[in-house]
Length: 319
Image (cartoon, rainbow, N blue to C red; front, side, top):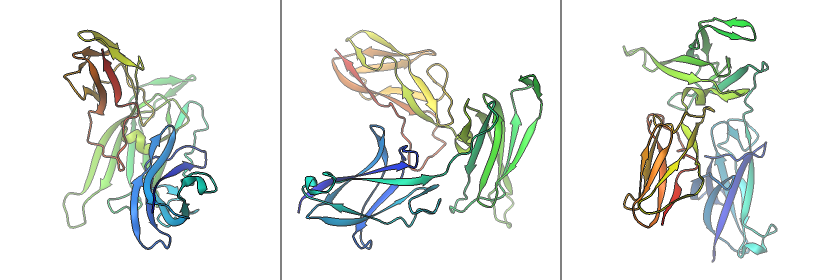
């Protein structure tokens, strides 16, 4: 029985890829678990790869799940999303000519601000047991001091939010504004004296009509663009590189983002890298090829599934 490569492509209702979807494969009856994987971004599409037995043909049941995405018509409840796929060997015998399949998930439509000066931040919160976190208090305090917007004075000191029964909160904030967010969460049982814990976040609002409130509170570096895009340097010479880092909250970080990103090379016997305030410098040490890697300096925000930095690693060729 031949083994075949099976690809499951996942996109939303707007044809955008959905990264981080858990795809589980069962037998045709849906009773025996076979394999699982998460979708990752590949050439602009979100895909999970499997190696499954093909035949003339063999059917499998796949189940897809991700918080906030529905694959069965019920938004947020994607634990019951069985879909039958049929794997052929050879793939050319299938109706599509491949063992590739596409699944569409219904995602939550982020609301947008009506006022072009504002950005609407919204999002859902859950407790440690995965239940909607209702009555979570969030205080947002204006940090951009007295400001004039279209001739109006912006002087309000704070905004108070509370999540609803679904753990949902929404607020409009000025684009480009800087705020201090105080998030209160009751962590302890009644018998404990730990009480309510408050943690503080500094947030910067992007210049767009909407943003995830979760990304605004817990931004992480998600993308690096390199200039030049091809890194080639001679032995004993240096190459100046100008990276641009951006975050999940829409921020484009200044200069080389040394406070947020660490730059290293995989093989320092081939090339070494040092970071300056406005550029990084690559030194060619010996002929060969290695990778330049950008990693997040702040590891306190844990994302499940893990979110890699798009654009890292990038190859360095030393001549």
